[in-house]
Length: 224
Image 1 (spheres, rainbow, N blue to C red):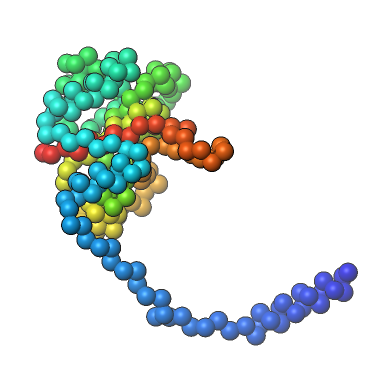
Image 2 (cartoon, helix red, strand yellow):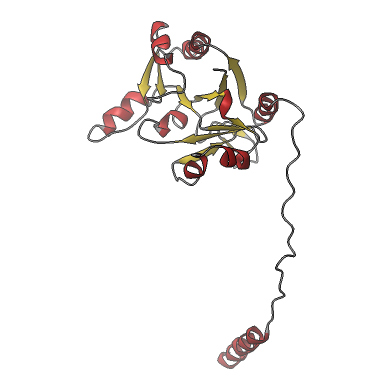
């Protein structure tokens, strides 16, 4: 047994020493440019988002967004929602408060982490901003930070993401090429790309939404 093993390993070493790999420099063509869209980006984004079970809503005013968010909270029988500290729509927190909905900061801080988590774990709606919307795949880019607690997009059953219209791009390449801060954000471990609600098909190959995160994703496109 030992002799056979030694002979096999020796053959492998000799073969490795004689092996020559072909030079493939310049043989691999660059990937083709994706075709341009013949429709507005917002329409392409809406279609791609719907294909992954997300929903797009378009509003022009703070009051319209507040009515929408408050309506979802009221349907869930709740008067609170998790939210970022600096949402990309000034005045939204105050408008929601006037409608009987309070935004709770979605961050855990020492030494009261357990108390903070207990206070927010029952909340069913989370409200965040978005660094970018990617029309080709219907994805949104979120960057967590001190004022952007990641729990708002992970813990509740319903995630509402506020996306300013000027942060809509054809794809991730266009976003990185256009936005000066995009490359830094994209390289951060605090950045995630979300495509539709949380899903899994691990059990009996049956698609289930909300298994590991929100079961609903609502993207609110805001025209400023």
